Image 1: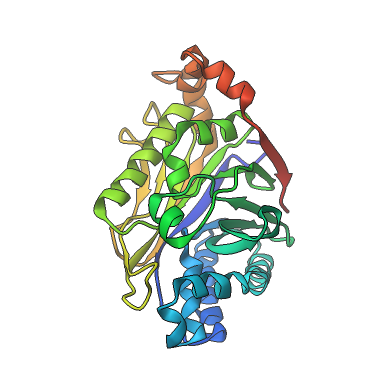
Image 2 (image 1 turned 60 degrees about the vertical axis):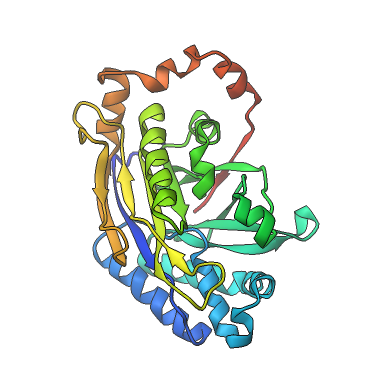
Length: 308
């Protein structure tokens, strides 16, 4: 790791999409979630893709049927949402990947993007926008991709964020790893069992080929009031390369599909480093033996940002 820390306890959420009546009610619920995870000793808390869209319910029933209006309204809350996460991160001394939400990005002429934020205990905020849109996001929601890729240098290690569909593309995660990422977070929101299976398969594959831990966090349950998150399928997991000294199936921890709550695991980075140098395979080292791999690495641009 980039720090002396060799082990990291992670809490990853199977987050049920709620219907909070007000921002204050939502604040109380999020506070309880963070307090529970921090109380179990977690140092990194991971929330899912689009979990922030549940805040649309705080604008009343007339907004619930207006997806475009939801995107505008919820995006306008991002400063208040991040201020709450920053206060909770500072209070408990943890890092939090806040649930992503849509926001209109000034640097893209006001187009809406799907934005995740990694928030540190000293108030630092690292922004990662989703890069590749699903057909639903692109054609129905009007969300656009933002090609900027980042790795966040923190006190708990260097972290990359591949939001849902992004995690299904090997070169996106590989670029983050080549730039120094030691842990990949993959928040998701999928409405079918097939979608959940794709995310799980992608997480296992990215962990295997990069010999790196990958953490997934999904939305779960049903929210019939929401045109965006009406059905949610998946299970949270912490995945590692399947090799000597690590779980033979690559699953460090995994939740029960659809059941709300935290999934906890302690990642042993020394054990993962040992696999890279002395495991049954050397996928991380041998990546460049693929045709075109060196050229892809050279062409990738990833920004390193400090988040404290």
